[in-house]
Length: 341
Image (cartoon, rainbow, N blue to C red; front, top):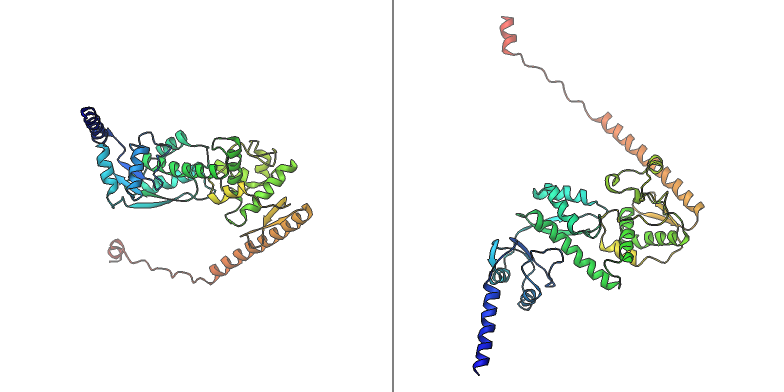
């Protein structure tokens, strides 16, 4: 009996020490919905046991602020409260580079651009595409570590789900290839319905041993939003030039969405080998044969010329019909009045 009492007392003491022992912690913590420890935060003070308790207590997800020097019991008490940090929305757009995204959020939240990039490079799965294109909710009063690690964590958790869904290990060559394909799809179209069709063209070309010959692969890093010209194709000797090299680029070229990655894993079953923008420039026309593709290209170029000509004409009409501003009469200065007298 005494032994049992001793065991119970030791257990109580151990629990008290566990919850009341002082520890250092980041001041901003995110409580995840599925009660998981984030993959990329070595300083995260809550482990699987703590998170399981929070899940049982049906704790609300979101950001909490705690003292830098605190105790686990205080963190859990704060997490149990309904109030959460007020947040702003930060958007990673599909097809964006990490440089573009970091430039945007550093201005938006007044954060150090280089610090953000350093944290990204420390944990990123890929040079590009490690942050999924979506909305992120970040506290107004934030810091570089909490901001970047949170977005990487949210993305990593989604990557893990997709990895399990498609039975493809996250760090395998096959998964990386799918991410590369998804990044090309994302740069070629923002139309989710077209993504499986673009994916089918990529796979059909790879299967036939054809070069991809896609402008998107040249829109990498500093060329992200530049118009690909024949001169650029000739001068670019990098492995990303799919006009010169067969196969996929060595790395993803931009951020991806869940939709483009799903399309990379589930391409449409077609015989398409070519695509070009339609007359309206909002969608694409797909074709199996080169002759049909050339006809479609000519139609698109003709419609593009018409649109450019129409824009110029509208601009000329606006300028011609805009009334000129009246000339303002200069009032005489004190010096002029004195000189007259």
